[in-house]
Structure formats: structure tokens, C-alpha cells
Image (cartoon, rainbow, N blue to C red):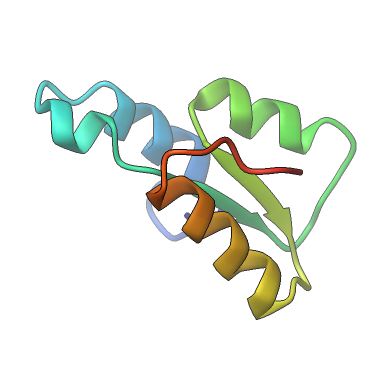
Length: 78
């Protein structure tokens, strides 16, 4: 989930996904990606329902590691 998107920001999109009445959609793993990381951002996105948070620039390896952990049902190490 990119944090800055046109029409809706990432936090609102996360909240809408988590509020879905479809349990599969509501449980979709979400990694928040932010290019303008500021103090407290990680906490805001995690509180909105993100499963993990990365600030840009990030490595493909770190993203793949988080995705792998989420798909295997483990809590991502941050």
C-alpha cells in the first residue's frame, strides 16, 4: 500500500480494507510503503491496520522478506 495515492490516502484505504464485510478482503496482508517517513508514521499505519511498514528507499530483499513472512503467517520482523 503506497501511502500517498491520488483520491484516497493509504491510511484511509487500509481502514476501508479492514472494514470490509468480506473476511478474505478484510484479512488481506498490507505492507505500508512511505517515501516521506516522519516521526510517528509507522505507528499511525500499523494502528490503521497495516501488517508491516517500510520507508523508501527499501531493498527488494527486505520487501520480499516481509511478504514471505506474511504469506507464511508469521509476524514480520521490523
